[in-house]
Structure formats: C-alpha cells, structure tokens
Image (cartoon, rainbow, N blue to C red; front, side, top):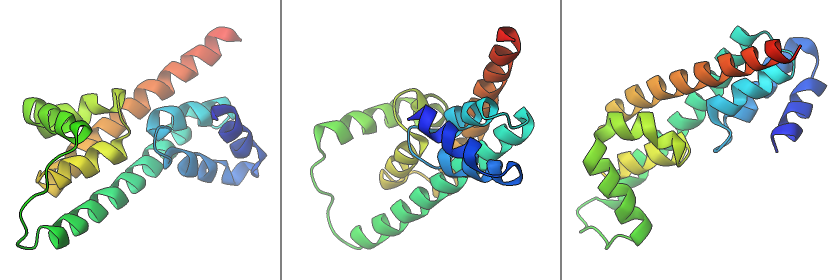
Length: 157
C-alpha cells in the first residue's frame, strides 16, 4: 500500500506532489508518519513532505472529531447509554487510565488518530482537548518519521 501511495504521489506533476502526500496522510493507518515517509521517498523536500503529511492527517482527524461530537450530541439527547462492546470497553479503560494526552500521544501506536480521537469524543472528552493533543501527537509522529526517512535515504546514498 505504501508503495502504491508513493507511486501515486510520484506520478503527480512536481508542483502537485504535496497534494498526493496530503491525500495519503488523510487515510487512517497511513497518518502523518507514513505520509511523511511517502513524501520523502517520492523525492519531495522533507520539510514540505512532513508539513503536507501533518496537514492531511489533521484535516482527516478534525472531520472524525466533529462528526463524532455531532453524532454523540444527537444520540445522547436524553437517552441512557447502551452497553459497551468488549473492544469499546478496552478503549475506554485505556482512556480512563491515560487521559486525553496519553491516549493521543501513545494511541497512534495501536490505532489511527482518527479512530482514537473519535472514540475519546464519544466517551465524553472535551472536543477541544482532544483536538489540541491530537495535533501535538500528529506533529510529533510526522516529524519523527519524516526525519528518520530523510536520514535513512541519506545513509543509503
């Protein structure tokens, strides 16, 4: 999948390759970290590749957060909560243990930021706190993987 996304990005005209990185990074499980790697491997300058990957991931995450917040507001409109599935209960337990900051920073090792952010909002976390910590996490992961990809390419040359 990463190769296909890199090929897609490389096939775009040079002035539009950053758009390919934005689109790739908006996909759950690709995120800012693999988006940055895709951009670097496609030959985009690292700063532009990392920035584009961050933008794509943040926009995608915001869509999920605002959607989850809207759905939660409509569903919770005076109704009692449904029993949780085992997977959701496990996610809530981690949320209760680590809080918004911990889940945002560490959650991307297990699930995409879009899913963790939507889950936190659906659990009742502050939408603004989730957005704040998710943006920090997306930036940190994107920069780390972009720098590692750049160093790896430099080392291999």
